[in-house]
Image 1 (tube, rainbow, N blue to C red):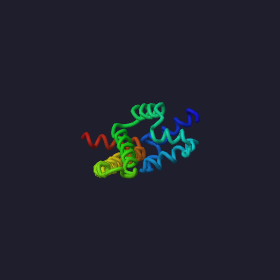
Image 2 (image 1 turned 180 degrees about the vertical axis):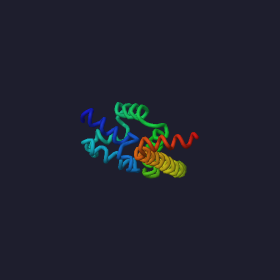
Image 3 (image 1 turned 90 degrees about the vertical axis):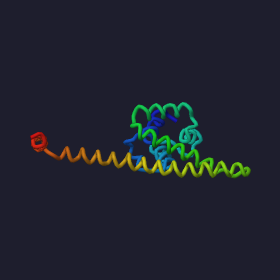
Image 4 (image 1 turned 135 degrees about the horizontal axis):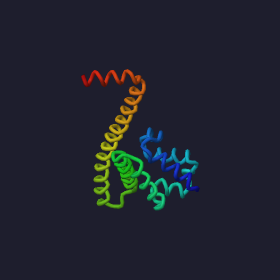
Length: 155
């Protein structure tokens, strides 16, 4: 596993502008990013990277996220990771009645978290789409038309 493959994986999964962000499901996004970065998603080391159990790569991910993304996007990624960690706990068999109560609490909290993720995902990417659309409109207007518009609004 080469350093450039891991860096490519990090960029694909954790960049706000990555086309992979169209895949809302974080686990699916990680699998597709691993394939595109030429990492085998079934390989034990790749699985450790995808589950954030490789400490060196996890630190590189956190560093990349904080340097390259908006706070809202960082929160979205963290919430998605927390959601999947909670789901892993919910998928384990019950040991006793106490486990059932704990798992019900996790289930309820994960539902609230899922709603927050969906809301933030929608807000973040709709906002981004609107900004991109606005940039296209501004580019289509000629320099003279923009000057006329500014002159009219200041008059």
